[in-house]
Image (cartoon, each protein chain N blue to C red):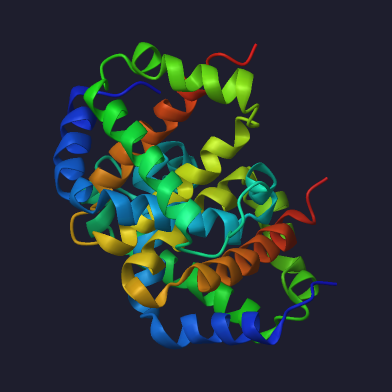
Length: 143
Length: 147
């Protein structure tokens, strides 16, 4: 399911508004993932604090959001734009790619909660497709 | 049998106390049909589902959204017995409506997003976890009669 011109326009317009709260979005999405999907905690056993909004979560939330900012800027070629970070997740971190879908859902929950008036059904489709494509690009280097 | 903590029971009851049933059901079903267009295959008799605007304005979609929400209200009233309560509904969806059960998950995701948008800050991570556990139990009960 590739992104249409309309999808890309909607994603960029919505992201323009949402990215102002990038740090909060990242931290909250990650916090929600760890609580709602406890199996994901297995990847963060080396952190000393997994409570919502903890320092390691805030820090890593920022890293994730930077990745999404990159993805939006490289929306026309996500595979090359995300190539390095895809490589890291596949070969070094060895994150089961099924988890990208889980984090995507949590990001959408936070976006819906924070920007409901702008998160129209059409923006919802575009963002859902965009995060699916990001997840797909992130899964490129596994085998 | 599903074990619910007191906190989970309270969180779920709180959600149903806070949300507008006439908004959440219709909105979630509309979004499901818009965001995952293949789900329209089950609603051939609903008339115009050809665009987001048409779906949002469609009175049959709105009415059916309320029916779906009614099912969730039944589940929350029978929290310790959802499997048995939903057995007839499961059979209906499997035998008569022939719904691919993956669609239940798609609708569940739309319900979660609409509720997040309605409840805002009140939809804390802990509340989300309880809500999604509830939906997972409902979806599992709906899947039970498929063979």
